[in-house]
Image (tube, rainbow, N blue to C red; front, side, top):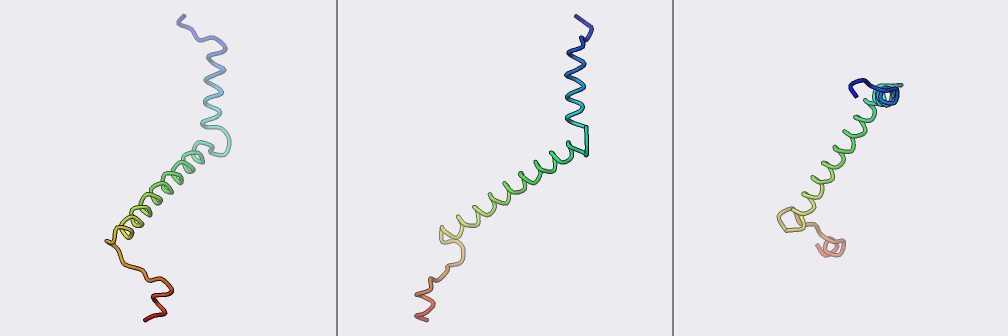
Length: 70
C-alpha cells in the first residue's frame, strides 16, 4: 500500500511530460490564459463605458439628420 506501482509512475510521467515537455507548453498555456483574462477585462470595461453613455451620463451623440439640420 505504501509503494507506488508502475501505473502510478506512468501517470506521474505523463503529467510531468504534459506540463513541462516540449517548447514551453506550460508557458504558452499560461500566456493564452492571460490573454483570455485580459480580453474579458477589456470587454467588461467597454460594457461599463457603453452603459454610462446609454444612461445619459456620457456625451450625447447626434444622428445624421440632426447634424444636417445644424
